[in-house]
Image (cartoon, rainbow, N blue to C red; front, side):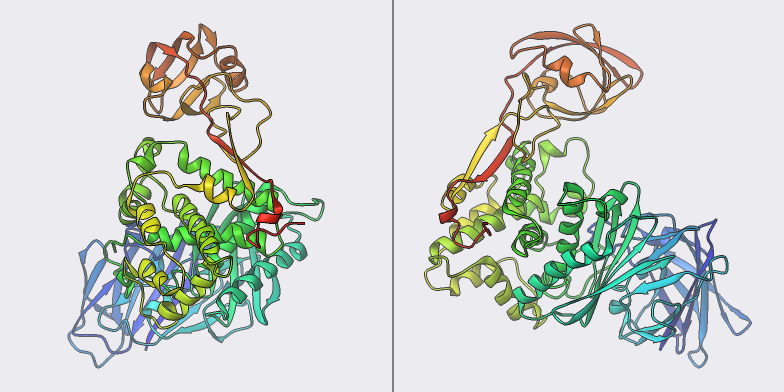
Length: 590
């Protein structure tokens, strides 16, 4: 038995204290900490936050040497007595990936706190979490099975092995906890941080989404489920776990009792919940063979993230609609946003979606200002591939076979069985359905660097796709446009009191040809000062072909450049139902 004791030691200093007791250590016992957390494909070197590690047997010190950036070795000599390792962990990462602690709340993933005992990762594990001395009234929430303590109180927990242990995040603080039932299974929405949430409405909407997903797959791979949510002024993120998800959301994303109808912020929160919940099947149980098991000391490469994140990104919004939480107009707006995000840059012509998946560790998770020109998102384009596949399956089967049906079959064949998927599993699996021939279509979508034939597919379902000029260079999305921009700058920008900072410059467009670069701050156009409030109105004074003098700072050097405006491109995509009789159940229509 391996035992961990976690205590929030110093809220002001953001320190957790951890004690690890090994009942029967090896003579030269090695300890290690993961370098990344499943679901977030970046080497994060969590061990850099460990402070003051030492070991002892009773009161006798045991030599502990760090032998690599994430490994320690104990000079235990004999295995007839337990050894205890003590250390602290600095926790100041307000995200879903690591650990955080202050006077208001605490959160941790065990990948950040719990050293693995090499050679004993299969052993059963117990974990005790104590309340902080400064905040004894705090509550504690997790999906980890409890062995002692009151519900939502501090106490002890158990896991079958280390792999299970690191899949149970913990949230503590003055928590708001609202439970609900979906498909007969107990769920809980847990909120930390100040909020004004309409808990009844949010849990009602979540219940509809969760019910729909469980019905889609036929069963749930968990006995209970918890949405662990950190509420902040401005933030967004989610990470899936075996019977819970860790979420970070802005306060405005949680609809209040004074708000009626649906708004974009709340819809985004529901889609985030839907996304992470769908991962319970699609990546937590059905997963690439490369993740069986996870190699947490180094990168695990797979070209299948287009499926595990892309499919999930399609179903998160689609199920939010199919469950009746948002209407078809809102769903089509989100779909237009996704199309615009993929089509706006030239990245999809530089990188296939399988290459994007494979290079997630470097190019996608370490994006720079040139990302729109060099990469394609396996989330966004993967979602469009899923859409294309869903519509094609429906058409080829006379609307009898859907992608949801295929996902259920795939999960039962390769997820529930623990077999995992190879790179060609999806394409080969689809060959079993009578009358279905999508091999070439799917192969081209995955390995070619071209746009997808979405217009034609959507037209078959009565959907009109109208390309429009957006209001400005920052506004390529799925909204209908009242008045498009007069010219195109060819750069995304952020307005400021003393100019407009360029965030990204699109290849071979006006700003690029003028010699501007990401990070430059435009202070004047045509000898007129640029400010946060006048960028768009200033640009709209010109017409395509006009040449102007642009003054900009690059670092502390003033540039004087000549910029010739382009004809604005139609980079917004407004989708609408023109022929509801052709929807054939793909969208709900009232």
